[in-house]
Image (cartoon, rainbow, N blue to C red; front, side):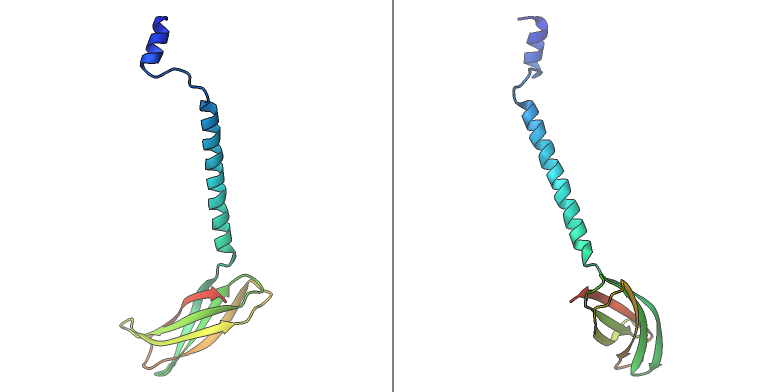
Length: 130
């Protein structure tokens, strides 16, 4: 046995059979994991709904008119929870509206939110595909 072989054996630098298979299997598992993560990300965003309040008007002590825009998949019925708050950020009005399917991706709406006290703001709490 040569000095180099002795050193390689002593410090674990010997060639192991099958190490290429282990690396190949590890790479395949990593590629599959990345592909699965990418698919879950894309699948989760297919039914994503985005809503933005574009304005509000306090009508009186018992109502707020909220203008908002919704971006959702075309052909999907959606529902939105609208909220009115007072100056202390307390909820004084709440309404769930169901919006019918449409051929367009983005749509604008105006809805009146009934309130139990004077509101100072109105906004879209959340929207979802029904």
